Length: 109
Image (cartoon, rainbow, N blue to C red; front, side, top):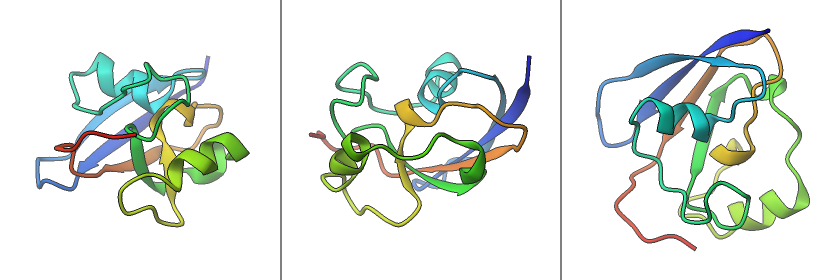
């Protein structure tokens, strides 16, 4: 079973955290399993934009973005070229992943 590290950076200035992730786990799963605050109003089923993150490294080892995910990212606060939904960033490669979590003090879509 493949294991990679996911480093979480925080827009609010909190210290970075790095946690292991196994193949098949999503960024959202790893965040929640490690008490990292990442909103997920739809329960992690690609039905909202609240688990919006920025992928700083490791994008090539994540699944391609779907049209549905892209539609929800367009509704997120401050979407960027490296925006993804944490629930859709499923570990599938060997490359470590670096994520920035935007401010989480809003009610999402």
